[in-house]
Length: 189
Length: 146
Image 1 (cartoon, rainbow over the protein chains, first blue to last red):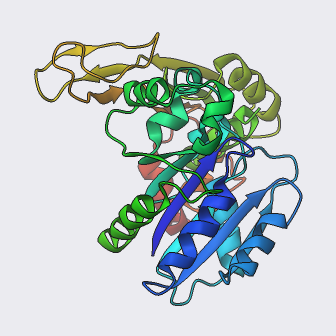
Image 2 (tube, chains in turn brown, purple):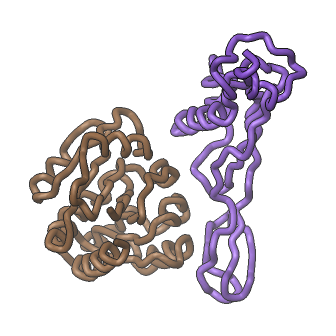
């Protein structure tokens, strides 16, 4: 099983990215999702709607997932033939970065309209990510953020990870991301 | 706010290593480039150690600085202000050498408490009054003598 940990601040678009990405990979391999959320099952409901088996961990007041929660989830959520296990972390740009879930790979989703300086303010999540998605680029003209400056700041903290500017709403930039992610998953197997 | 969970794990790891002996010191290596706040961790450790083998233990924290190195030109540096991991000399991606640590390095145990140390060797010797001068090896052979 290849396990990928998706992390971001609340509302950056993790679930939307998964809704765009996972159906495109369904023919390549069996996929399952573990959703981390404080209270609701809204995200796992969205995965079910997309035809992806999902298990919801509600953490109560805990601001991140840790390996024990994932272990407990796996007791109740048998993986069977699953080849890609996606873990969608609790929306939080600080704490989840510190907790290793036993994943093979980390993906960070960042809402590009939140400003170009965040990679320096929250370096740990940017630094530990294996790939970084800059979402909501369709809104950039309205937000006064420079995508070039943002990308350069991401590169300073993490010079190695590929950076994908995307918009889940318009679909811009999604195909190259999906193609890269498919290669990653099939390559990691 | 996650320091409490980390402190609980540190105590659990230390208790696992102590195998029944009271713990005097837990030596922790803590990287400068982690999301862990030292003061919060110390506070949580003090609050959680009550009633555990670490009840008398001191948490000794060794801060490991962030050090990056360039695989291309050999530059090393400590980019602790801007977390920039692009080599300032040749612009290649630098690798993190240290600064991400969060691990229990060692624990110091109270060797005088032979009773509780006996527990870890063999449950049968539990509660028996064994002299503090006894060595581990002797206790290990105790059941045969019984």
